[in-house]
Length: 220
Image (cartoon, rainbow, N blue to C red; front, side, top):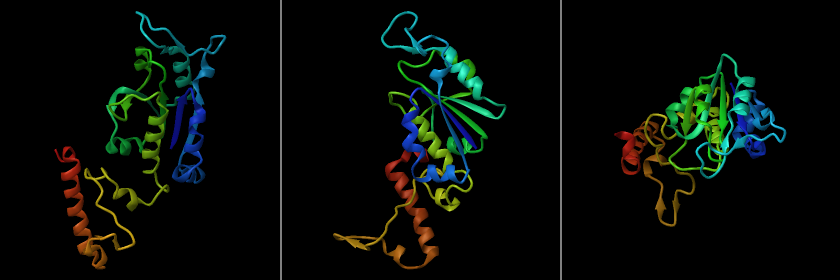
């Protein structure tokens, strides 16, 4: 898989690309991540990428020309172009699974007061990571990339992400490690029994109960 991120702040991704699972995924060639500053596609003398909104109002709006030029420069027949915006459909684990089957994702990061609405003619879909506003699309781009990359073959063990929250529509079952007792708080005895069949049964029931208690909306 290849992921291309169009941004005005490429340095924000330096730590993201050089640590932990993402770094290993790149080294194993499970994914190729390309960070492009779309400012270089501006044809204006000062490389300006924004301008005042028609009709007036606060803030600046991203111009179409550099964004469309950047998209066209990297787009192939296998690309899926995603605009990161609060107006998009809310992101979830099922969407992460769908995106993990794509050959090339292009993630377009906004900034300032947002995009010229005509950008919608040049993208395949809009995605939001939640009902709140961020300074730009860089953090959503990292979140989406991370959630997709960990599902790719060779990145982590399949059984690891199959037990994740939301993978089967439920929250993950409770996890425990040593010590077995800490300040009077004990690990459930079934997990210490060595009976794997009972452990599996307990985990299924515990995941359902946890979901009912904390995220009942997932069951609805």
